[in-house]
Image: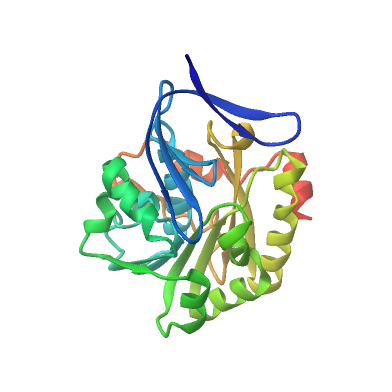
Length: 280
């Protein structure tokens, strides 16, 4: 008997993978976590039945949610990651020589535990001397911390359940308050293709426009996310991610990334017309 996993994206579309076996399941007060071993994409992490990452293409998301902003700031020393309990974004952040401290505020410890056990290639960042792991509500952390950061990365699940509050105006406003005077924020912003997801993009853009002088949307292609095309929103107090791109530092770092490069950095901010319309 064959075992298949299907993620439903709308009443008429979805994404299906043939599964070798279910490796692990766990449930917390926040969500249900599942790890599958699949034939095409290797191990897959699901939260409440939705794909969060796969071994085969996780590098796209984690590189693109982190490096465009990190290379838009001339000297990002302190970074806050909200969510991101799988460790992939943290892995990318601590690779930067300018970064002295990276705080990960993840609400659900079972995500960190599962990543350590099943996705060691993502979890390597947890052991960096630069990393500080806090199992806490990111919304509460942002509201109460006295620390200030050069960059905040909101590496969240979809805007439902425990992540819903990570997409509202008050949260972004509190983020702005703990950013330095030239700080930036990045958040994942769903796909522009399906109305079930794209309806969040104009809202995020409006929130950012009201808070940050510079507001940009950019794209990446992630095969296992709904429709394969994904958006990220960047808000900045000072630096334009295209005009202030730190290309020489990128070249000097020579990080040998799999998706992101200097050409991708600029191209990602060039939007198709139908995506531009969502930002108006």
